[in-house]
Image (cartoon, rainbow, N blue to C red; front, top):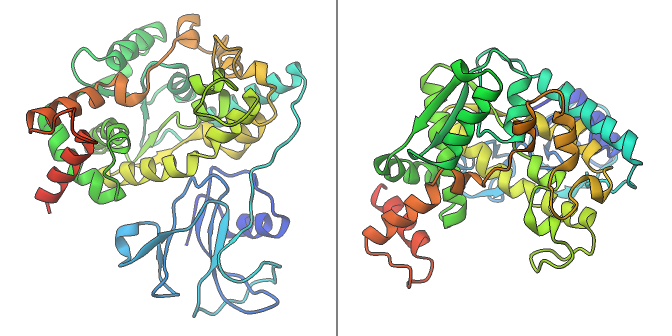
Length: 384
């Protein structure tokens, strides 16, 4: 009934209001007995790494998949909601009725440089090396994030997806060669037919039809589909690194970038971390629909907690990004891989460019408002 950890650990985290109890995220039904009433709770961790849904029409109904419910509502990250109608016999916990915020992202002061870097390095390397490689593949784009994940799984196959000639495929080949992992690399080249087939499946799984979400989900879905077909149950991903470690231009340019409100790099980093629950919901639902369970070691509580203590100049100096993560990679990855820049997956794979091309071929011209979104909705509707 709980995904991601044990009920005992969630109960302890609930009692202590601890947002980082040492998990990679959790959600599900938690049976408790409380001073004001008896009944189970629906819970979801502070970063929303495991999605969970409930129905306002049926107070007992909930699911990890929104398509299981007639009228699904997403449980917000860090919240609990009382589920009516089940008996429980567990210990008393002091929480309020209904849907309430319980866990909030901590805001610790920045550590000094040396201990901050050591804490990040220890957390990252421990978590990537702790991934169970059995039945697990790695999503590999050739950037420092996925290369660190791959470094902890030296015998796991590494998959990269994109159109022929795309940046991600070339970068993955270069990185695999530098890491002596050429034999592990499996390239998934997709076509326009793959896009038109996958779009309705992504829309059905996630409920999203906006162009950006679908463009991001496409390479994830297609690589995961191949991973599942090859017999692997889990896909290790580098998700979270850009948000936690200052990987975005808008963070590097803070406070002069209109896309962030914060006056500091640390504040801008917290702003982008706050977007993770929405992003992770899309990614988790996409990967599960393709037949694999995601594993995200860089989103483990230990890594998140360490990243939150970094001073701004170890996130980005305005030129170099993800400084602390790249320092962590020193001696673990070849210098060229540790320093490599990567493109966002929708651009590095050319999924965004080719979906735009398909939209225009279908008559949805760029002068039209949201022409790619209109195209997505048209092919999703035709597939119903």
